[in-house]
Image (cartoon, rainbow, N blue to C red; front, side):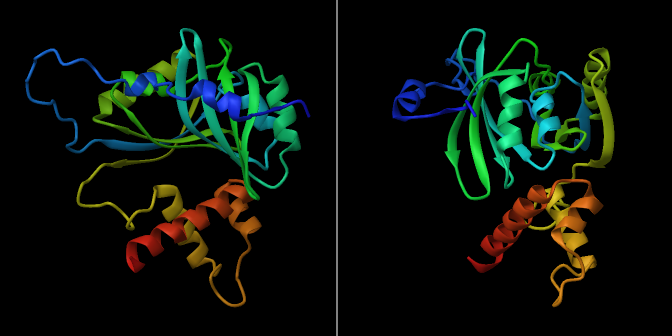
Length: 251
């Protein structure tokens, strides 16, 4: 493999770089009230796919690896770096895919752990993305991870019109949009404490199918097939969900 390994010098070069999306806006003296979009809204869980979506080519090479972008940062005009965490047990196919993926360049292995690795890549002009347009129409990314058929994303929009605008953006660019589910955002209905929708869905399925029974009524592989996700996604979501519940109830 020819994936670069980040060293201390690489890290030093990126220290102090500010994410363009979080730069502080200069105080202009305007003290008008903040406009609120916090009332209600729509939460949509969507599956997005297109051959030129960010990392799509790599994901086809490594169907057993689940990828979650961490953050984007513009280091200079026309050059955006993305840090992604890849969950799995065999990363050879994933790294091979990175080397030939037309949507990214300069892949670097930043950190490695027993069940996951962190990579840094630069987005190319060939990549189609959707996070910027989500923000442009007033939406917010709640969750984003790879799936067997593209990207699984959970978005919140202030109203139906913003969701329609995002869907139109995807349609104009031939990005396939499949709706898993929609729900009205309700401040009085937050679901299970501290859990995301995907974590809650997994825990409900695991409980109903006897995953926590002794002996177990279903394996992680079978849960993965039922939910149409990779085994690594089931493993890391279970770990995070149980950790969140413990943190919320035991501390």
